[in-house]
Length: 119
Image 1 (cartoon, one colour):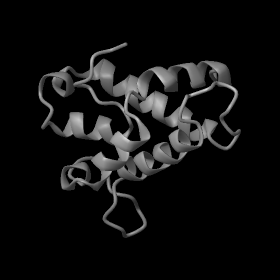
Image 2: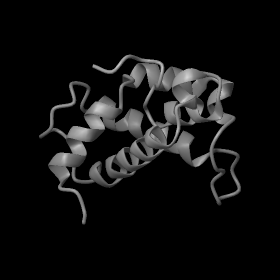
Image 3: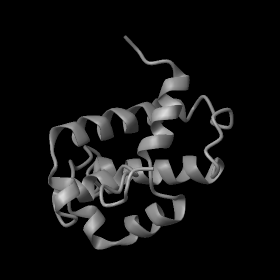
Image 4: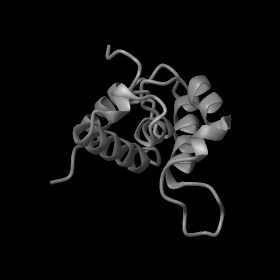
């Protein structure tokens, strides 16, 4: 069953705990490119790194995370972000314990800093 857009937006706003500035700075670091699956387009960018760039765009358009301020075009990527973060947070504690782990770096590429306290 597909989640309603409203639910996706709520979960995205909870899970993406990095600001656009924080995420943009992270994506400039070399460590942000050292985890995740490579894209099939021959570039050296990972899928997660590309996702992070899309998340930055979404956050910059709607910095206050107003639920009605997202475009319909944002929702499909937000849905991917929610699924990825929930799946990886449920599977392992490594990201929370070790900020240098591939898991932690990958989650940060998807906008979730496991070292930040939950709101």
